[in-house]
Length: 269
Image (tube, rainbow, N blue to C red):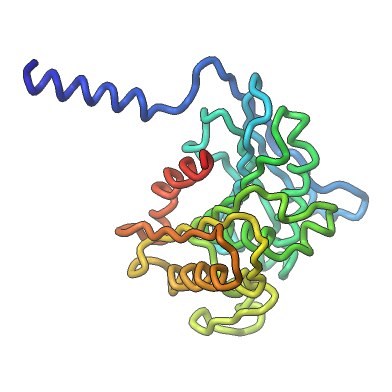
């Protein structure tokens, strides 16, 4: 066989195996579902506290990824990541209230309310509530960690945070978020670790935690180092299921795309 035909043969094989898992699975998207209810919701809560769900219609007991968008807790809009489509799993994309319209911990509580909604409702779509992964980029990664580590947020909605199967933050802040520090007049370069920092809630019994960051020399401020310290302290606490990944050559914004490759591998573990 000549070299060129062999090359194209190998390329075609690689292409087939790199395609999303589709088969006969069909998918449906439901938009703008309110995850809060009651008479005490203000107009901003009614507008912002919504989620979209993308799920396989003819599959059962599938995994669900709850996805929180980034934007520094001041911006951003929910959307289903394209890389997670056609994978025989559900994706729930969440909007939450933003600063400065609200102050902390309103956005954290919104994240908890959304995750609780998923636990209580995903079985209606065919999903398995024991297979819920919480992820997000930047501010979304921060929210994922806060809800997964500080158990009181989900407990307020009748859910044990340890029921989360895995936490997979993309470049999440592990110290107190800079927007919360800004509320107090503290500059970005002054680190704070208090009850609004994932690092404050280190515990041995936390769900498996997969910390993914961009290149330490290209990341926002000390984002890699925060995650590395988080990894170390979780290890020292006795947690044996915390992992750290640094994506060399990618900055804070760029790292999300290759991080999805890691997320898809993590889902199969």
